[in-house]
Amino acid sequence: MNSSPLDSASTGAAADPLSQVRIVLVSTQHPGNIGSTARAMLTMGLTDLVLVNPDRFPHPQARANATHATDVLDRARVVKTLDEAVSDCGWVVALSARPRHLGDAPLQPWDSADKALGLARQGARVALVFGCERTGLTNDELDHCHATTLIPTNPDFSSLNLSQAVQVMCYELRRSTVQGQVTTAAKDGHPWYAPPSADDVERFYEHLQRLLLSTGFIDPSNPRHLMRRLRTFFNRAAPDRNELNILRGILTSFEKPKNRRVPL
Image (tube, rainbow, N blue to C red):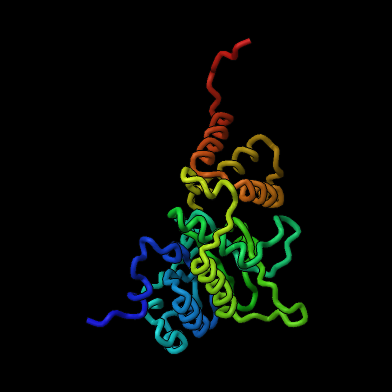
């Protein structure tokens, strides 16, 4: 039996860091862009596609634009929420040109690709998240990502098609893989570092907000402003799985303090 393009691209997937990278499209309006995205992915060796509430999928136009990458479409998952799409991911990167007054400066595409491949080589799953064609990602959706990336387009004409943006990022991932030049933060290089899943991180933020509301530290009528600053702080710190468990334990100790004798 002849192998499909996807089967060929997936050979040795266990050893291929690109198999750990997921492309997530949120609220895609035109089915042709989904097909073009699948083609852009497979040309660079990526096959994991997740669609969050697409307007029309499956659709003949998606298959037509995918050309020989229809296997990517056939294996694509359709989910209802962004949380569901990235719950098992250790690092979630938003592609966005939306200006934000809070948060760190966006990463360059090549820096995002290098860090993504560094984490993927350690077995962590990484997601690159793209918003809908008309409005991009909302602030709430950006809040569920650990970092943002901005493709440096021509400031006089910055319009970039969705699948073109995906192609740029897939190329950067492929380049980083082929060259083998992975530049990551110092902690990412240690074998003991295991990033928590996005689902674990979200539970930590929910726990933190619940505690800060109970103490009156944050305004219950507008908790998001401070929580976005705190998300930026902890995303920059990038606690590993054990460190996040320690932080959760600290929060629990404030909620349920233990009577322990403090030595004088």
